[in-house]
Image (tube, rainbow, N blue to C red; front, side, top):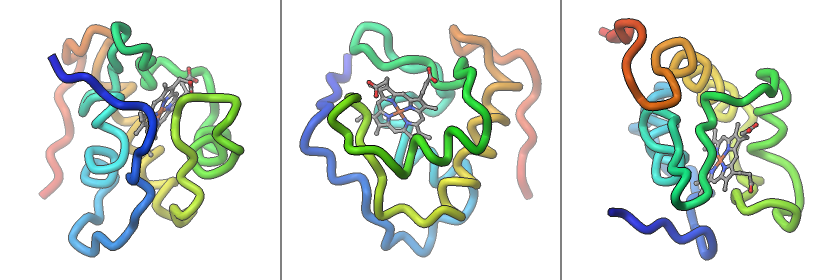
Length: 112
Ligand code: HEC
């Protein structure tokens, strides 16, 4: 079992020129908590973010803004908006691909 620390996260760093796709960026910045399939970890209080009711725009804002005091998820205030957008694109792809238990409901599109 992996115990995730919710504090002291230094994940809001963006010197990663080799990471370009939404999948790579999601896996780097988000999967530590939410899992590569976005199914979260209820035991650690991490929601399945693929089940979110938020819109694309709301998620981009949720990732990049806020004080961080009203929530446990870190605020990625240094993240470029363009990066938050491709990550959110990937989140919606995951949403169409996996159910909340991480079972694949559709074949993942393999990028060339
Ligand atoms: C340190 C752990 C952690 C990391 C890293 C993290 N999250 Fe979260 N996330 C949470 C927690 C905990 C919540 C539940 C709400 C809260 O307390 O902030 C959450 C909530 C969310 C929600 C809202 C879900 C809903 O029900 O509407 C979305 C969307 C989300 N995260 C997306 C992301 C994305 C995208 C990233 C990467 C840029 C990310 N998270 C990185 C811990 C994390």
